[in-house]
Length: 343
Image (cartoon, rainbow, N blue to C red; front, top):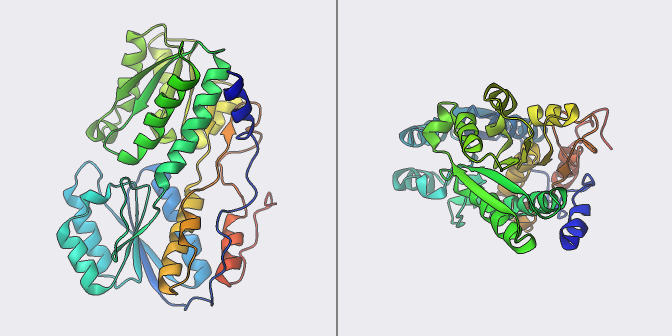
């Protein structure tokens, strides 16, 4: 437990700097068009918003084409619609690379338009597919932080129900790393993984699946989710089921998780910034455009372990909170004024 306590301290402070440090050789040309192929899932909407802000800073046109992650056939049509907009590049996050069809890849290769992926695992970069080669490491780092907190908070004897959506392989980085780290640090701890299918997620059934698992395992007093969006409604569901005393948390806090930490109704979340991921994806595209080095510096983003003790006034975690400005300096474009809380 001493090892977990020491490691945990490194995750408690908010990060101040981005991982990218290499400036572009020149200011990118204006007037380009980029498209985000996305979903209505809140984290994905955050990604879209941030990519739009980055595009605006560059003087580019930006639009979103939606698809339904529970219906894979809609992905092809979304990519086709995006390509018809004659973009410089197209972004997507969270979908396994293997689900992008050969026909889509062929069309993009013929057009010379790259697809920039984030949150994709496994990932192999090609002439057509660019992106985040180490996004798995982001989830693994957040898993390390949560495992450290769990072991320390439970005094080395905790039992946790761990929600997981296998349909998003990138989330294996959190779930698998958390399980292995807990096994290493805390032999007396127990982890019960509860898998949720993509159709169940789309139907809003994640919380009910988790609540049923908790009811079936009354000795498990911790509940962790592999994405903050999946935890929406968990407190109400537990209360309706007459379940009390659970400590709730997991990976990638959302605004509702932040509010729950402030009220003391949830316990601990790792921080993930969809804003940062989108800025980094734009940076990857810029380095492809200018044939510039440094794209691997975009792979791993900063994180923080948040609890009721350090959540403060945070509603939507975005750190460094001047990340866009830091990227803009490297892009050699005018710097977007910082928010009031920017430091």
